[in-house]
Image 1 (cartoon, rainbow over the protein chains, first blue to last red):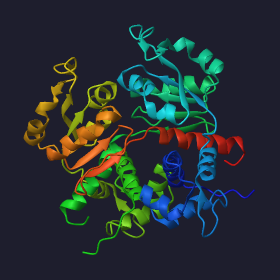
Image 2 (image 1 turned 180 degrees about the vertical axis):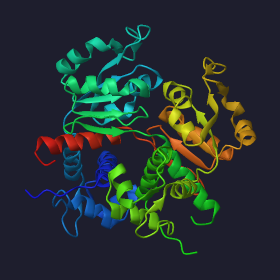
Image 3 (image 1 turned 45 degrees about the vertical axis):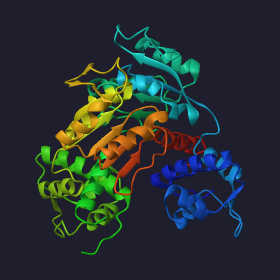
Image 4 (image 1 turned 60 degrees about the horizontal axis):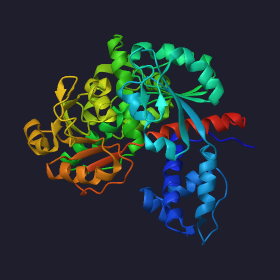
Length: 213
Length: 213
């Protein structure tokens, strides 16, 4: 199979399409056009077709896409046709918020452990989870078959936590600490910077102020 | 002036470039090429040039960009040459985490108020802020000249909160509630869905498993 480099923006849109298709499916809609998907999510129909074309031929010309089929395919492409066990390191406010974050569960991400090194936090209950000590991290990752780790600790110890996660067999990391972390090439990592979204907002506010939007 | 539609992906990269330029400036680097920026942030040099070209001519052919100048310009384009007062609604774990999120302050976003309707939370101290009641929201927004509001409440009351923010004069909203909110055209809104980033990770994990990455 020929492998194309797929832009990350395409993956993000695929994630958005699949949410839209999920809603359409719930409403009982059977077929849908690229134009309807485009309008529903706010991109151009050509963009929808181009994004989907990376992954094969899904629709029928003049008929559109079968909603259930396309939903199934997009979820499969995103790796969401199975459940993903996730561990969270850091039981501060952010880690606590993440454990009860509904958006994860809805997409098949199941938090199977939350860890901290603070004796005051270890043993505390968050939802239906109990905060575990860092010593228990490797065993839980192995036992629960977790491939994804979330780092929600201060920047000063984020690299140590990343090292521990990698050593314990984690293959993908979502990092909230404001620090660039080093991981082996075999491990996927993405940093979350919440300020970026505020900057999209301020960019647009300034464009409006200058009459450019 | 001719106005081009600027892709949101360009704005996001501009935000990334400006962080990289900030680091370069701190290291005392005076001039930098599009190739060096590209390598530093992981995109192609052509992409860097194309993104910057939306906003004018910044570099000198064969010399590159002056780091301080380009940093100044990118921050100005993003609307970051001033401080932005921000209000947060919802003093749960997420709202509490956001109030102490260093990444906001570093980019010029200053939390000037956190609000909740829960009597058990009102009056509580978070960092150097005291949780205020929802009744105080309009006055604080007016007094502090806040243009940006962050919604960190359950989905069931998110639309009510959005309506209150809009009525109080907020021009841009960052919404963490898993719900599509209706706001007037004059108000900018972006939803944060943290699962999207996990889906980029699972997509890549699956590509690796299938030997495609």
